[in-house]
Length: 187
Image (cartoon, rainbow, N blue to C red; front, side, top):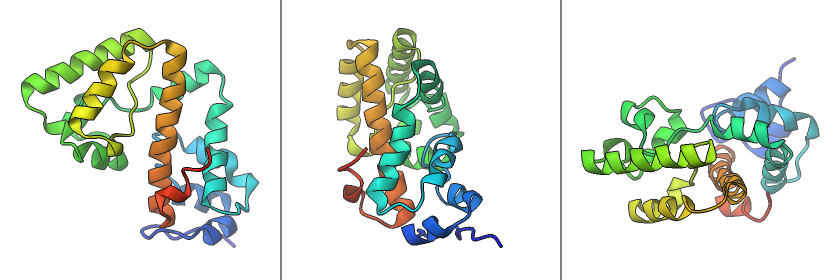
């Protein structure tokens, strides 16, 4: 008998702990951009004591990746204010997040500036600039982008993982109906 978690409402952790592997993965779909394998990798570690432990396990999967696999994972993420944002072809989560700052509707001069920063960043580091955009204004996001262009690849790999940690905490909190602050102490 399947114990899949109902979607459409924020599932409780207890329900996720009891769900079959497919239900667990479905309920947490989209927490990581185009990477359901991250959630699938921790299904066998259940039950999780709390949301922070679940999030820490998920982030642990990413932190254990060798650099080439980590870069492949990072490349699954859309550019901020990029072509996918303008076309509306990102995942629902990314569309909502970038829409918060209207990144898909920037005036042409601003869009061109972001395109140039995206191209420079990708050329320098080999993956897109990743930022938990919900924690920023347009000005602070732009300033962070410019500052991070001058850092080392190792620093940017670490920072990208930190930003993925923040993004996934917010997304997981929404799905669990948990305050995001409950997830920030781990990971």
